[in-house]
Length: 169
Image 1 (cartoon, helix red, strand yellow):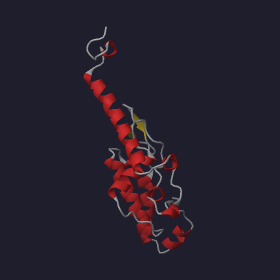
Image 2: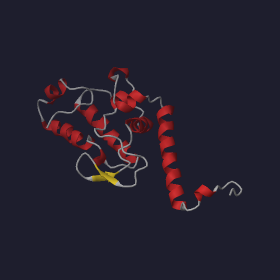
Image 3: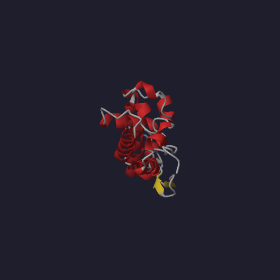
Image 4: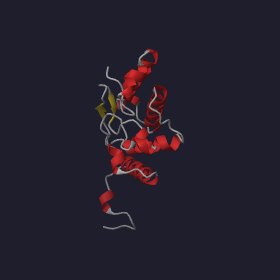
C-alpha cells in the first residue's frame, strides 16, 4: 500500500540504517564531485602519471594499498598488519583532490625535502578524510626518506628514483 510518498519497502528499516546508507551515498557522491570538480581522471585514480606536467596528480605519492569499500562497516587488516576501518584508505583521486584543496603549492622538486613534504601533506590529507596513516604504506616510506637526512650520500640514493619513489629498506 502506498501512503503519501513513503512506500512500504521502507518498513522495518531503522532510521539509523537509512542515515548510514544516505551518509555513505553522500560521501561517495562528494568524493566523485571532488574528483570531477578538480579534473581528476580515472588514470589519476590508478596512479601518478605525467610527473613533468606540474599537476598535483603526479606529485601526490601512491597510497600503496587498495582503496577501502566506502560502504564497509567492519574493519580490515591494513598494509602494516593492524586493523583499519574497512572504508580506508580513500581512493587515490579523493586523496589527490584533498591535497590540491589544502596545498596550493605542493613542492615538485626531486630533492629530499620536497619529497618529504609531499609525503607529509599526503598523510595529512588521508587523515582529513578520516582514515589512519596505517591504512597506507606512506608512513613507512616517509620514514625511509627522513632517515636519509643523516646520510651523506642521500643525493646518490635519490638520483635513480622516480619522483615519489622511496629507497628500499
